[in-house]
Length: 327
Image 1 (cartoon, rainbow, N blue to C red):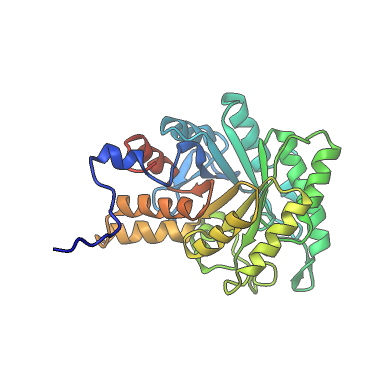
Image 2: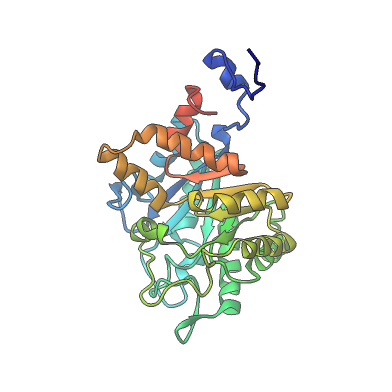
């Protein structure tokens, strides 16, 4: 009988298979989104995101404690302000909701790593990501406000700022503002390749940030384009971005791979609200094994090239890593 040479799959015990895994995951690579509502006392469930909550300033540390209990040491903060106006001026207020939340977290847990989302959509009364000129966002006027907001977050004690507005030039403006005011060590996580995606719906309901008119395709990326993502990332690197991001994650694994191959920068992916909600809904309907799909989806994102992952599953994923189910 003629023997045929063929590739062999890895054989042996589960411990051997874990030892030889090509993709490694760690709880240190996970970032948990926290929504803080200035009008709220206590916490309340978010209808569009099963298992997630809005937290009042009086109990934001409850969210931090839950993260730490699962081994997650990093969060990204999103603020829901009491007041909104055309410019989103509460975004950079000294006593704004994010600024107050950062101070509360750092007072109780100084080593917990706090990233702040820097955008105006939650603060403007029209829901767009910046100042308007007619019915369009004024890029240059918005960049000034974004830089002002990032600086206010750094002054409040944020460890990292993450501009998500997709305005041209905002990374450079933030870097200058931080450096000129003594915050040279505060890094920038740039939403570099943020697509105009339908997967953001549950987040916009949770953050109260849906546009009152039109859409965001004028300043977010066309889902058809991959080379454009590389151009956007190159511009952010040139302006001083410390970490790049691709958002959403699962529908854009090819973009994650391309960015990881091209740039010598850490890469973050954001498994957005729609991705989370689909898994939760399908699991609740009995159509999938939600836990296994959660784990497999995270592995795929890291296998594509991400170094960090923002996900509503952060706590559950950290538990799965600790049990050896992934990681």
